[in-house]
Image (spheres, rainbow, N blue to C red):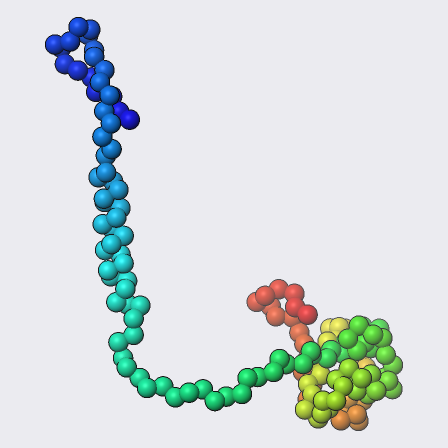
Length: 149
């Protein structure tokens, strides 16, 4: 609500009158800008090229199995997931971890301390091969993302 000051013809020096008109100019300006934006953006959102696409017949993929990790500490301790194992027990423990899946197709991830003895690492690799695990991945730290798994 606004006020209007009257001219010099009144009784007092300033006469105040109520002004109940709403200024709609800013509202109209905003609405016109939005109208222009939608008029420009609407044709960009539609596809003008007509294509007769075939039906998708691919079977839905199943969720991948939980990865199996073998960790080798600097002192030579070996872990399958979070469970400590001996070198001789790697095969049976891995078999229990992967269940009925084919060990020749199962990928095993090896995490080793950077100061691990090469012999301890090779002992684990030999044990994996002896038990039929031929797909092995080595896990390291991604320098772009900081510390990894």
